[in-house]
Image (cartoon, rainbow, N blue to C red; front, side, top):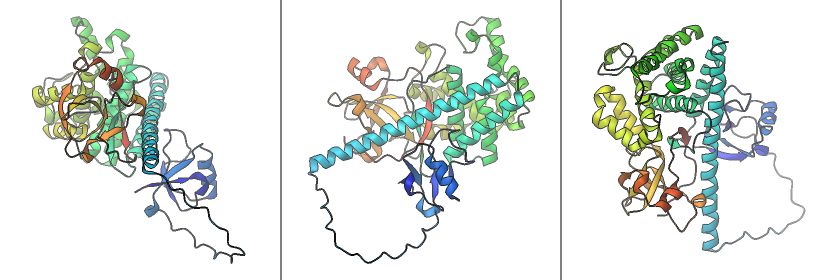
Length: 421
């Protein structure tokens, strides 16, 4: 369990978690035990008002000095007594503030990571070793964020800023790391998988803009040129002196278990485990974020198609784990609840795939003030069916604001629970 503490109350021996951007602090880790007053001053200089800490992983506080005898009794003001309606209003405001803070933090960290990835791309041609080091550093930062206490959730983000190629690479890296973590990959293998996932499309830097996204109207020469991005990525990887695992991710991220992939058409037994993970997540993200919005599937449709029509193309164990991770209704899915209300899935915990957190269309509450409903806490309420945006009433579409481009990040759900139905 973690709690929060005002930065003015930090002391040596406290085990703290710094929930800031990737490069926003000078410490090697974002979770550590404070060892000196200098570290406290550094944390206080980050602009944070409160930080999370783990009491059970912290040193006990030094024994307090016995208080001096009181010279006079000072009457303490009576504790404020609130009527139930005001108490409920304040609790609702606190839940909403925590929800908005978590959403802003996820958006901020994703965008900061995309910024660093774009800088990495810019360095590939001129300084490949620096680009490699940056990719490894970014992967370590993501893994470190994933090691916080609590259950990780997959969260849908607001519309991504910047170019789609960077957002795609981040989507694939984040979800691949989450899946590999669920599958029990060792830490050193997670590091190399994540580096390869970040760089899996690095060969597309050599392609013209039109050919960086697979399109139905490609000519035969254009399709052949598009597929050359794998070989070009391997060439960049050699110059960057990547590890064998990261190289295999780049080389095999379009190979499929039934040997219908490319560039070599090898079967499942010849595809590296890390590459199997990245190939599956890459396929899913390409279904959700096609070259044209009209061709993009909803997250539920994409997962359903992979399971119903293409399960032979992927490692069966990994596909089942992927469905558990993303939920039957992945974040970004539009759904109708069992009480007929419309909602959008906002985050999914892999331990409860059928009970995600949803944003419910409620005309009586503004969308800015709407709280996510945790279906796990409402046993009698569930999801009846998945919908496309054109199946929703216009007001519900405006309210839920479904994402044209689906972008994912991970989050630890620390917000107070919400049970209102």
